[in-house]
Length: 67
Image 1 (cartoon, rainbow, N blue to C red):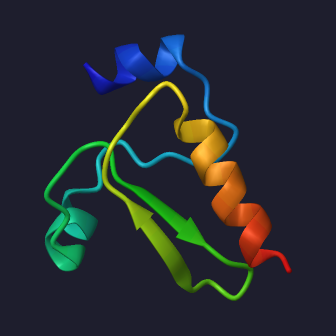
Image 2: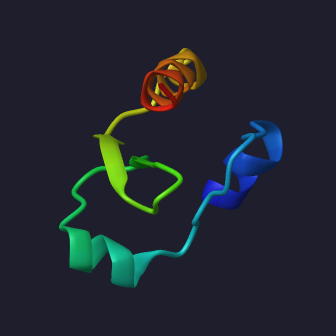
């Protein structure tokens, strides 16, 4: 199901389809979950939802962390 979605909706960032170990380790409770990571490898934001405008939301967070 996820692979079918990803074949229709292209993301310009890396996606992790089978992250069961990470899900347990980070106590992720919803799908999709977006982890925004800065250039130091630190998680700066976690978004636990999906929407038609998720790309704009993520872009805004990334731009604010580039300053």
